[in-house]
Amino acid sequence: MCLSVLLVALVVVVAPRYLLDWDAPSTPAADRAKAINDIRATLLQGLAGVALLVGAFFTWRQLQVTRQGQITERFTAAVERLGSASMEVRIGSIYAMERIAYDSLDERATIAEVLCAFVKRTALASPPAARPSPRDTAHKGELARSHAGEVPLPVRAPDVQAAMSVLGRRARPRQDQELHLDRADLRGLRLSYADLADADLHYADLTDAVLIGADLERADLTGIWLAGAVLIKANLDQADLRNVVLWHARLDDADLRATDLSGADLTGAVVGGARFDLSDLRGTDFTSVNLAAATFTGAVADATTVWPADFDVAASGVLPTYGAPPLRPQTYLRPPPA
Image (tube, rainbow, N blue to C red):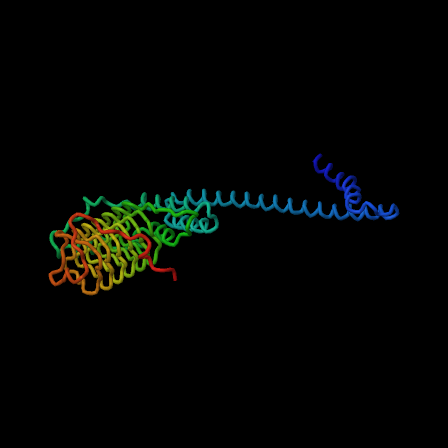
């Protein structure tokens, strides 16, 4: 307050005379009073403008603090409702978090972590060793249907489906974030065209999942079940698919370039138009798979790779390997931006 009084006194009393003497020292005595008043009026107008700007800044700052407080309250309430016994309340909480994520860049990473934790806590998959084992090749097709259960995820667990839908179309945080969804029971998931790039889904169960056009680039899919899954036109570029179960899966036109498919089982899968270029196919099982329309340029295989009886390995572009994995590309295989 004292500083404001001193500033006004300086502008009204001292500054006008000093500025007049400095800028127009030869002003006649008869005109000095008017000149000083003009300078004083100009300075007061400038001071009022500065005061207005300072006030506007503090008002904006207060609004930001108030808005952040409101977002924090909304987020806290949504987290509390996520633990409700009511399915409808939980679903409403999930979509409320999605709205908060769009409103607040700072909360996006936290909301994604909360939703991932909710999915894993609500739907924990059985370990791979406890999953059914096929008696023979024909039994794999039966297991691909029966292990999925009678109803898809949106019917069996609509809250988990809602959380996965929000994660699949989430607004990105300031920095890249890995979704930790390992060991989740996502059988019958419906999530076409989802953004799951770099997600960690190892040992998850996605039997009968529909992931048409999904982006799973560089995702960790080690040991997951995708039996009977629909991955038409999915982007699996550079994904880790070691020991994955893909019995009777649909991989039409899927991008599997530079993937690690060592130990993967694709028995009965449909791979028309799929690209396996530069992939690691050591120990991969292609039993009963029509590979005529798939590409394999630069892929590597060994004696443990199981090929269909009518497949010409030598003409396909597959390279033999003696223990060394293929040279994996980084970014040059990614399609240019649209």
